[in-house]
Image (cartoon, rainbow, N blue to C red):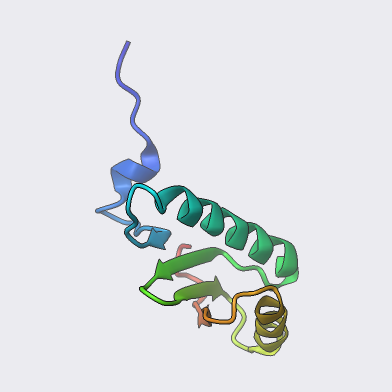
Length: 106
């Protein structure tokens, strides 16, 4: 039997980038990983109509930055979403909408 290779891990250096950018100690890793999963689930549930194709999470020392990649150019959903996210306890987080063109391949 041949060795199976994860296609995302195999292509990371070529045509994909990491979906989460942070480094954690051994003790903090599970909390950060579960936090990323919860954030992605929250975005998927709340922004189903906005066609968010990718969520990139960067964790810095004191806050997090979340880039929501969406084909819509208008920020009509972003303000309402930011207010709901602030109410949920993500006050130190920065939420950015990244508009992408039709042929970006996300």
